[in-house]
Every structure is written in structure tokens, then in C-alpha cells.
Image 1 (cartoon, rainbow, N blue to C red):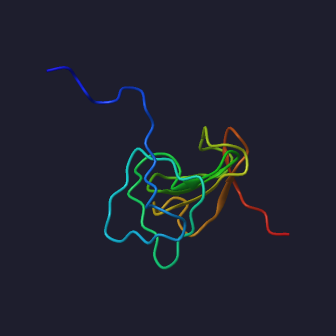
Image 2: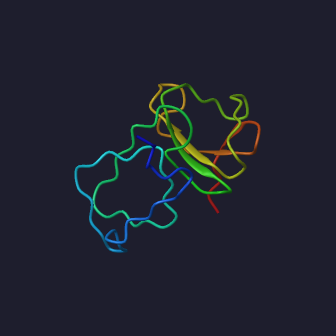
Length: 105
């Protein structure tokens, strides 16, 4: 019997439309181009940013952060906090190579 499965064909579900509510699902390996989250957003990310776009990300870390000492590869402008005793309660911003204290204007 020949293989009748399409090969190399993208599939789009015509029934999944904007405004669809998905509850209690795990989505992995997918790219959302537009999404609105209301209520509680929970991420299980253990590395990398919890939320990011093409220019910066938001990091919730457990490692120690010391301003102008702790190195990072996070994009310039990325924000981080840590639950570690070294740096807890502080907001840090990436300069592209190290975490710095975020300035308040």
C-alpha cells in the first residue's frame, strides 16, 4: 500500500480563529505571532527569558546577580530579578555583557 500522507505540506486549522480560548493545554515548540494573555501567565522556563521579543527579554533568575560584575548574554535592555540572596529585591538591566542596576529617571 503506498504512503498517502502528504509530505512537506503545511496545515492550518480553519476552525482555530482569533479570539479562541484555550484552557488547560500545554503548548510547546510553537511560535505565537500575536497573543493576549489575561489572568495569570505561568512559565516553566528554566533558562533564557520568560518573555522576549526581537530586542530584549524578561528574566526571573535563581542565580546570584552582582551589578557590574555578573556577566550575561542577554540582549541590551533585558530586565532581570533574582530570588538569590545576592541581588534579591533589585531590578537589573543588561548592557549586553553585564547586569547593571536599573536606573530610575
